[in-house]
Image 1 (tube, rainbow, N blue to C red):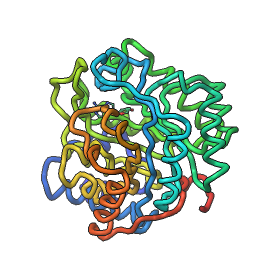
Image 2: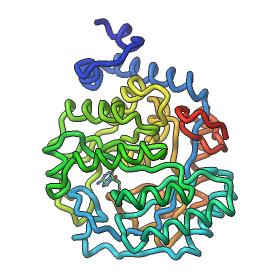
Image 3: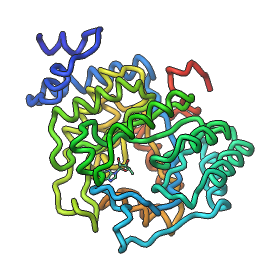
Image 4: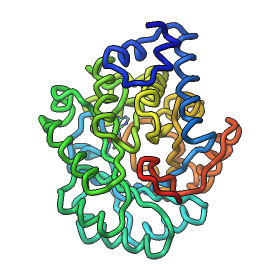
Length: 347
Ligand code: 5AD
């Protein structure tokens, strides 16, 4: 099939077609892919970019992911937990900036148990008219349900790799199948679901990335997040090569072709390996940016990977810088909750 035809096809993309698109080498072809992805994005979202304010409230983590700087074995990283008061104050800062989604993010930290997280959700919802996304790692089914009832709207849990062998290699033999059961349960009980992977992880092939995209389609995710792998200090992968901007952008663009109306973020990790990472992501099919509102002195300690961009800034400055960059790219910031289009909820 000719490239133009492939980019405009209506029915579902096959695995081979996805692999073919991810393997495009000719610069003009790659740009055709990006511009088709942006065209589809515009059909669904116009030129609006949705913002989600992130609070990284704890960098304690009981997991052992080979790629991640928060892994429990990293004894060099200073650990912190924000207090409930600090988290509520940061939520207020996000609300006052006009942003209407608050993302509560942490390592897998059981100190923030069922009740404490429910208290946070309930307190935020009572004070502010916002959507809440939880990004707390793989917890248990009862907790997910309690948090949904407490008022949380979305759950972000990346599948990280759809290849069971690689998944076990990265996660000390943990099972991909368990992860998928969690994702399906979250969707079933009514969370808007976010998932995704890292591009350029050690041992990963283009075929694996195609399977990551297909898993997002199978799970019918409301947000598909793909950022480059970046080595993190004090981890087994600290000397590995980072993923590339180009392959990440191709992944975003193909995901847009396959998923159509799903949200896709232009991630901080992409912006950390490329001066114009955010802009390039938005020009290749992304429609969401997640500004980091974590206050000092915690901000500089959420070191998932090396050279994370923006950690030295004041949170409010970082948000304004992002807003300026979105507008300079000819787009507009959407100050709304930005619910999934699949939910048919307007806000
Ligand atoms: N590079 C890029 N992203 C990473 N993450 C973890 N470690 C890295 C890394 N080295 C992402 C993972 C995970 C989240 C905590 O951050 O996708 O879901």
